Amino acid sequence: MPNLSSANPRAAFYARLDQQSMAPLWESLHALVPPRPATEVKPSVWRYAQMRPYLMEAGELITAAEAERRVLILENEGLRGQAAVTQSLYAGLQLILPGEVAPAHRHAQSALRLVLEGEGAYTAVDGERIPMSRGDFIITPAHTWHDHGHDGQGPVVWLDGLDIPLVRFMGAGFAEKASDSMQQVTKPQGDSLARYGCNMVPVDYQAAPETPSRLCHFRYVDTRAALTQLLRSTPDVHTGHKLRFVNPATGRSPMQTIGTYVQALPAGFSTAPLRSTDSTVYCCLEGRGLARIGELEVAFDERDIFVVPSWVTVQLEAAVECVLFSYSDRPVQEALGLWKEERS
Ligand code: 1HN
Image (cartoon, rainbow, N blue to C red; front, side):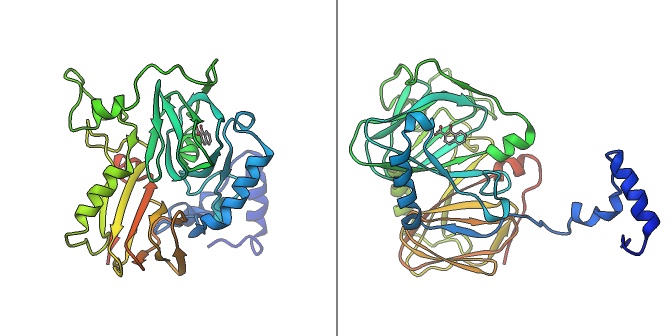
């Protein structure tokens, strides 16, 4: 490797190159094309019990309307200041209190909301109010109008997952506020679930492969019923009982940029070591256990969130029966021919 301190003519040359906004590739070639993924993302965990008081404090300091979205961002320690939980994805905890409205807007970024606590809130997506129950997962695909409200009692908290770093990287972000803070309700509650979420679609509906899902509500009652049934069969050695959510009209990911998954692990079950190129955000919906993420051992409990970076080996141990939700950029990597995994 060229050494700057012992090669002054080179150092002087580099300084002159720098003035021209140029740089010598040979100084960074191996870092640019590492032999294996070398991500800045760090294995990490956010414990719900620790985060919740801060969220409630935010609830006393600012209204949802003033904040537009009252969210505490979960920043990966390897990516501080970038609003990034992995290199491509964002995570945050959002709080809405009774009577509040988070005003209608839309943007190029796609979002998911995984409901962690409380009842009675809703997300309105393209004119339909979707009620939020614990464990439900609601999506607002790119450019769909959405607002949140809360007609019930007590705080409601959810995990927001967005593709903010990815869209920023692409320089493709647009956003727009609606003139009215709440969308006109144009569809009865349950409409999209009936049309797109019951093994049927409207008779003349044809979805192109890249079409985002018209089903935006993935109810935990349905997810849990499927997992309860699967728990009667033999789990996969590496993943337990793991399913991916789909756009029922295409069989593809509900959003093109964010893949969403759920897995059940029987009590006492340990998964065999696995690594993949998609850094993944996990949220424990039920149970508790231990995640071995590379060198780090993370004890997780209900509602805790942890990150497994790209190409870092993960092993999950369920102390009791567990349900884990997760999201990653796997569909993007697959579309680009980049995704790889290794099972040992
Ligand atoms: C957003 O629109 C929401 O709609 C949540 O609830 C978090 C973070 C960054 C940009 C837009 C929401 C967001 C966001």
